[in-house]
Length: 311
Image (tube, rainbow, N blue to C red):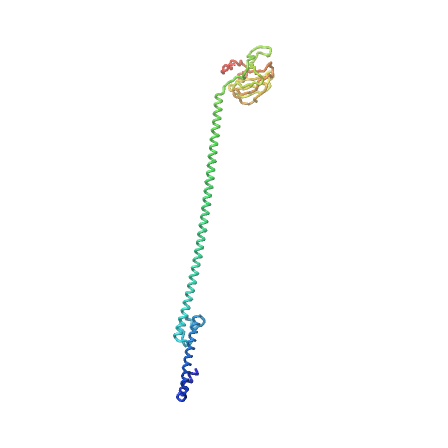
């Protein structure tokens, strides 16, 4: 600097001029100013390096200490600058680590939340499935119980119907067993003519028994059998004939109406018609005949007695 170049001349003039002390002071002041400027430059560079605004070296090695010659810094300033850069790098690394840790914690928290949500959804689905299974099982049990109850009721109804049918059959069998094997052709009667009786009322001798009774009195089949005739028969009027198991045919004449048709099955006591006055007759009665094997008539009285009846 000019102050340093002028120093020898000032020394030479110091012995001859009284102003030498002022020049020496000026020289010292210049050196102090230069030192201050150097320190200020170093401090500014350190601050700039700490703030990341000054690059101290073009070298790729960021941790190498810069030379004082290239930066104009003293070794202590260069060391401070290097320390500041290292601190800044470490601070950045710590900040990056904290960011990474924070991000990792956030991701873990999000994953934990998603896992809890999935677990809750799975639990809800499992509960719903269990409820559906229970409802299905209950419905199946109810259907099975209903089917069992229906089957039980049906079986009970069948058993009851069977019992009723058996009771009816038993009652019918009992009634049939208790029913008389043979009955008289009518009730409330009196005999007005007997077999082989002669008289002007008949073209030949009488061929049966006449049971006189009021008009409309029921006329009954004397034994069980099958109706083989139910029609008008001339002098016999309305006549019904019944064939019995042994081939004997019984005849009922002069009736006012029929209560059977040909082909009907009748029991002893079944009504076949009613007392009337049709055909050749002088009063209401039923003309009863017995024809063994369907042939010629025989006296009904002994036939009835043989079967336990007394007309």
